[in-house]
Image (cartoon, rainbow, N blue to C red; front, side):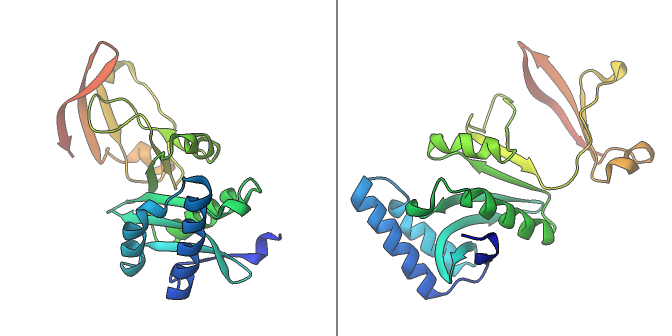
Length: 198
């Protein structure tokens, strides 16, 4: 299988959706696993134009559902048809999907590793575990910036401050931070004490 034979489609057809349903149903019947139990949500994403397929020779062999936010996209389901797994196709599909979202000006991707075994794949794709901030995000929540980011730096006079910029790394020196938080570090956990937008 050649990479050029694999194409993503951000406007799949009802025929594509029907093919996906067939192979998801087959996987559920044969293994008792897979995403067929999520069919109502998958179909909803299709009608809301939040489903991208990966096709091989014009047949869908993978798909991703997603949710758009202001600056990031959250991946719901990302799956390759079972007979095409462990061939490097998931990596190719991820790279094509990431390129698509970069072209549409999103800055990051976020996801929850489900099933938990998918955590290995997402780490290989360069995703980073969300930091433990004491609330809201489960340990299997991961993210990945889609843009170049500045390395984390520390400065002795701001040990309990977190600052983020929304500019290119080379512009940081002459630009005040876009967001700034004072932090209370207690028992090696970080709690936001005072959130202030600059």
